[in-house]
Amino acid sequence: MQQILDDIAAEMAQEIDRGKVADYIPQLAHVDPNQFGIAVATPDGQLYSAGDADTLFSIQSISKVFTLTIGLGTLGNALWTHVGREPSGDPFNSIMMLEHESGRPRNPFINAGAIAVVDAIMMGHEPKETLAEILQFVHFIADDDSIRFDHKVAASEMAHKDRNASLAHFMKSFGRLKHEVDKVLGVYFHQCSIAMNCEQLARAGLFLVSNGVNQHTNARVISSQRSRRINSLMMMCGHYDGSGEFAYQVGLPGKSGVGGGILTIAPGKGSIAVWSPGLDHIGNSKLGLKALERLVEKTGWSVFSD
Ligand code: DON
Image 1 (cartoon, rainbow, N blue to C red):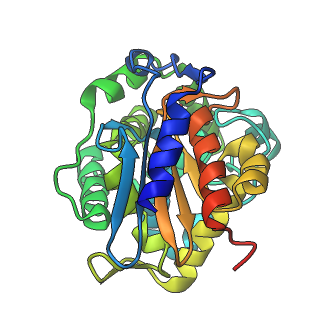
Image 2 (cartoon, rainbow, N blue to C red; image 1 turned 180 degrees about the vertical axis):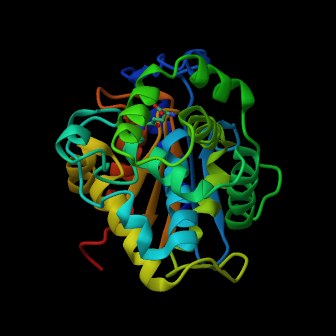
């Protein structure tokens, strides 16, 4: 595995077309696109990494996997009255379907869906309490208490909140959000601002590799049924309107973020975190996708074969 990751990192270092760094969040526009990191955590407790795997980056929408897990833990199946579980086929920040479907977002990974999940898990709590709960959960699954919010990134998003605020107000007009829009957005922007490196993120995904148990810490995080279901959602919706392409090229559940990270789960085999800040036209990491294609070619990992 170490050789495979070293080869992939060396190959990615040669790439000229690295995509375009997200600039609609000004704080992310400053990130150097010439970076690439990859890490794989395996159920036997090993961690392999290459490239810039210990450089912190903004996990952005990857955090939606964690808040979905918290939401299902808190509300159980009642969460599905707040949000659907169908692929949208639309960009991550699209408002179109919301009008057709009475303000109920298609799935928990598009922005509207993640905002609805945050509103659901707030349940009358102050934003600070919900943020503490989210960070504590991330510490628990990553087995690392050093992970923090990046308040500058969160503030940068709040200052450029127009699109997400529109989604939230639109949902609220259908009676779908219980809390004040700015309070919900404050939590949502902070969850997206969490800074992690590939090694931490690969560890954080381990509970989805082994039927809900993090085999590094031996802690059961969720039931095996829930782990399967979260993986299904990642497969169908984790890359927005690029989910079909990701399933075709990589064949594993994955969740991307506009910071350029992708968390990918190979059930029973490993949790893969890859990061390169340049994005494709959909908003998913360009080299991240390429590196994952190489990894599955070399390992044969896929949910469609054994
Ligand atoms: O709300 C936003 O637009 C960002 N905080 C998250 C979007 C994102 O990561 C989309 N993923 N590729």
